[in-house]
Length: 303
Image 1 (cartoon, helix red, strand yellow):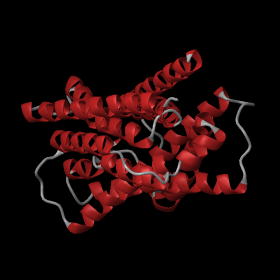
Image 2: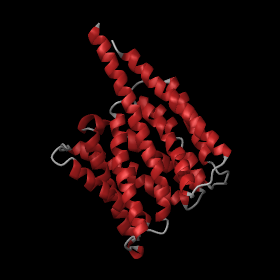
Image 3: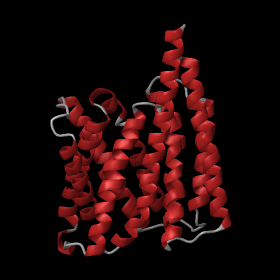
């Protein structure tokens, strides 16, 4: 009996730690979005390549000698992760923003929790949890309220936004087997490396004529994105996926636009409104529902 109680307590502790890690990752990404306002004039893919490169170098330095070797199959998956969840996401996002309003793109990408709540369990050959789907729907509704601008969008722009949504989901779904096999630290490090290489290739192909050194402000923004929104957020997110189901972690993706809103308002680069803060409250309700569901699943799953 004591062993059963101890195991149940350990499972609950791991689940709560997983939710806190997912929350921390989303807060890191959301707070860093305001930093991108300093990069509007800098070559986009070049900036992403440098950002991921710095993050990869930092993690290699931190985990030197502790990163496992990868098999050919794992290396292929890392390449797919970099091509879809990092390079592909950024390319679709940039192209979408050239055609439609940022609020429209944000609202489409805000559907990440719902996609993960459905696709995650199906990929693991289990039925989606009704609680997780409902929580994800609430989070997505709140995220749309926070970001939606009411602007019209053309079909191509929406398709590109959907591509960004797919890339954002792939960042988690493609990585899950890697996290299980080589760990969160190695997955984060190798993913950043793949992203740096692939974004660098795209930058060489399309941005060489506009290449230049970043200004002091741009350098600070790139460094912040590398350390906080890449190295830090990647490590926290993949550590969360090692402890909680992807549908639970996915609910915290809705925290990103909320943190972006709060940070932007504090820095004077975003406009606030009562409706947007109502949306933030809706996101909070969905996140709490998802977190409570994790605790109940952990308790129920203990012998």
